[in-house]
Image (cartoon, rainbow, N blue to C red):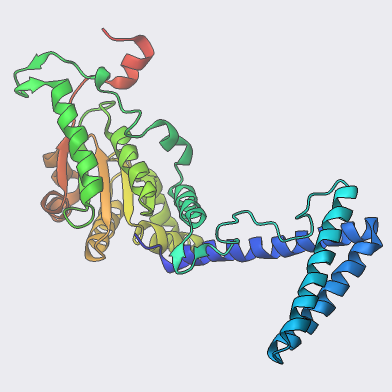
Length: 328
């Protein structure tokens, strides 16, 4: 997944700073070495002069002169190594030292992104998601089916554990087929059944694929819209455009816990509709049932959500209570 221009620019500025730091550090080490042994400076000056002479000899077709100068240069380099050794300095002390030797701190190997660039992109996306620490604990690797009952449930036609196993598979499938075969999920269910946890599982997996993910509670979402609308807050306006509306995945957690009014209803419709138009993915978690979404946010909002989102209803006991007190 390609990064947005603004994200790419952030990374390239970091690489440019890194290259400046590399040059500064090399200059500092050279000056330090010269201060310890003036002969090192003389050696470098002689290498520069002989290298220029050798280049002229090669251009003029004087192979013998070129070979002789090559031997002189090699001898000087060997002498430099010995001087550095006598100073207890490594042989490459005066050379450029890179954070990533593979791409020489450019971020690219030829036309391909270096592995360090890809990791830097993932780190940036984690930072922008605002839930880096949470995702270290809540992800597909740490999701446990043990908190769901293995007992047969007549209402489900299977055990809650088996049902949640199928839900887990659907969530992993969402990541694999995004965005061609679906961009939106609505998690519904009572408190503590795993809606936020599964949202975070998807978030981590999407970030690892270099998609930008932004997590906001419903209250945080509407607070940002409020600042942008009533306070003329430029930072809030930028958050709305670049993060809320343009991130690859927006997670709206606990929809329905905010104070619903005409403002929140209009902004919710604007948010989900604008993201739908821009073909961006949205994941919503809520304790509300589909009918309650219609009652609280109007038919227009409910229609947009229910007709364009994969509806996943979760069942089970409150996992937070189970973790605190143990299984019943």
